[in-house]
Image (cartoon, rainbow, N blue to C red; front, side):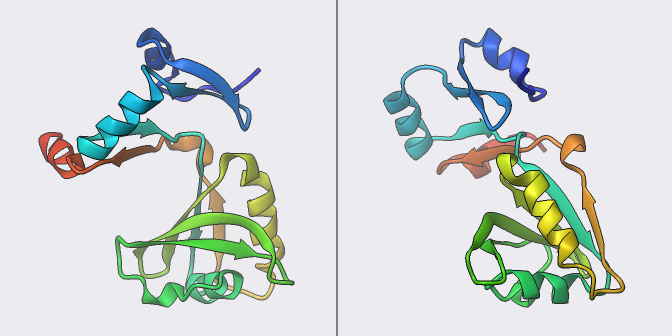
Length: 161
């Protein structure tokens, strides 16, 4: 049986066309794809991406560890900012793509693809051996994630304060 996000029942109630995606029962559209695309380009759209994984990497060695595993320079991030990057294998091939947020010094949040959570965590753990002050904490089951997109996104977020 597919997993469901916290918004699943509301999405079904609103008439979403649901599909199985990476082990999750997810909405693919509500009305027409063209109408929804136009709305996001001109207004704002809200996407339930709660199926994505949330992995915290913390400790004094977190930055050094992340810089070892991704081709981007994570040390350029300031608190609250993120970088889209690739988690590479030892030959430079891809394990996955992900987003790394710097929450504060020694604390990072990795957003990983739903279908790759276990593989990504296994890769992180296998490559953490040489780091003494490093903690990898999969909190995917404790978080929901919404993506707000479009030119009126900031207006919507200001209304929720």
